[in-house]
Length: 416
Image 1: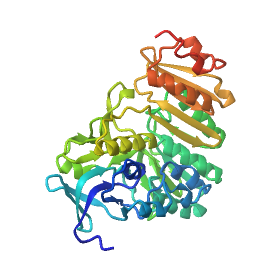
Image 2: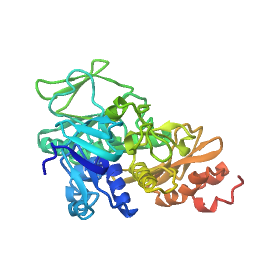
Image 3: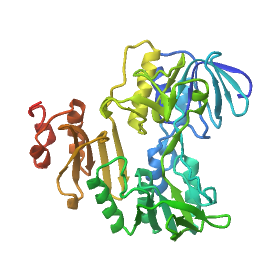
Image 4: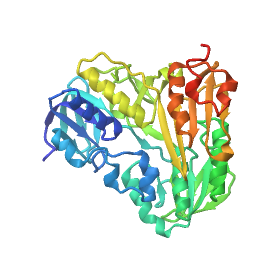
């Protein structure tokens, strides 16, 4: 099919990740029978991103098993997949967009689900061979192809992506050093108790940490041979993995006049400030009820899925608003971390259980109310803790700290 010509669809979805895929699925489930096209930069049909730094990198799951739906699903639902195409401009008045190849696509409604791109280092050597992000299947395929010649890896960034990649590479017998600018890993997303637990776990698996350290440049002739830190130390390596967040892909919308900055601003239905244009997922800045109403971007499958469903139902004339308890997970070694709620702005933390047993939870409070839990190998706390977060429960601290008392027995018995 020649997509370079002028084409037109009732609904165009930009982005083929979790948000875009769920928007298309939800529209059909809600009975939408008009034309739908999904436009994605990658060559692959929609697939899950979280396994990229976990099961896919580890070789535990082939690509087919991380597809969001089997390939034929899209054809059966009459959803046109336009892959390897990048949208570079949007004209909100004319209701059309332009791709990098010059194709013009008209839309009745536009759903912007473009996510983001891995943030790159800006220092010298950032583009050397052997320097990788972990955002796309292509990133991970390149990384896997290089691994046989790699002994030492430097991971830049101590967030979940960096830690997950480090855990897999350690299993492959690589020598791994993690460089983190803050004084602990997971500093932006978790309390100190969880950070120190994960640092200890990784150290027990032979990982080295350089905390409070920033990268001056990447060294190498053509390919990376080392990472130079600000203090002059050079960490020798044949591969560097950069996990320092994403840059939301919203430039065409902002250029078209949409309100936004770090992401594009949306209301509780997913609408941007431009008519007939919705935005959902990693790129959407929204007031979140579980962040005390603060405007945030949430980079999670849960958020992508729930915002997509709200936008689809709104387009179909249903009266809905986004109000979903955030949740997230991370697999490292044999540890399954499950998070519910957002610990941003917490003023108190309580550890339930003993981290030494490798099964425990951290409960986060703000103003005496439960706002989040980080549950390590503690599925029951995760499942039962969701109600506490949803209700903003006020539970006596000593009751929360007693791991022998199931969380569901503490609420709604607690005094509110």
